[in-house]
Amino acid sequence: MKKMLSAFLLLTFALFFSQEKKPMFWQDIQTFKKQDQETPPPKDAILLIGSSSFTKWTDVGDYFPDKTIINRGFGGSRLTDLNYYAHDLLNYQPKQIIIYCGENDFADDDQLKADVVVERFKTFYQKIRTKFPKIEIDYISIKYSPSREKLWPQMKEANKKIAAFMKKQPNAAFIDITKVMQDANGNVRKDLFVEDMLHMTPEGYKLWTSVMNPYMK
Image (spheres, rainbow, N blue to C red):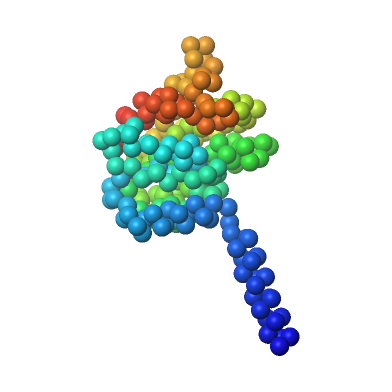
């Protein structure tokens, strides 16, 4: 009886700790899988992959009414998370992939250097290219959120280097949303952000749309 009880307790603890040790954003990915099972995703869509600026763009289809879009933005994801879940995030048949990610990499470690983030992006880019050699891949520049002003210098450096990298790649583009989010004096417009000074208002997304439209397939 004692052996059975001990075995039961060990199994219970094992199950408990296995649930506790799920990697970050695991549940988000499971949600995507469930959605895809319930409603098979369309082929030849534009696939959005990235962090909360995409996650919170829940009505993105209304901004691009003539496009078929699959939004797979999740939580406060970093490029490390995109690389970790690459197999699941790329389990579609898109004609174009647009990425917004990197901002949270810096926020997660305020000592992080731009070169590290650039290499993380290049790794993810190569993973996409391995599966989709010819489709369009676009990267939206890291936005300068007022709440993360101290991180801007490294963000700007990362944007500059990713832009240079994308310029050399076939069927690829760097979508710079920096200027459209500035006022006449070149300062970031705080009115484009909600109270947390991190996430955007509908007007912010409207401006993104104006810049993204020419790149949309």
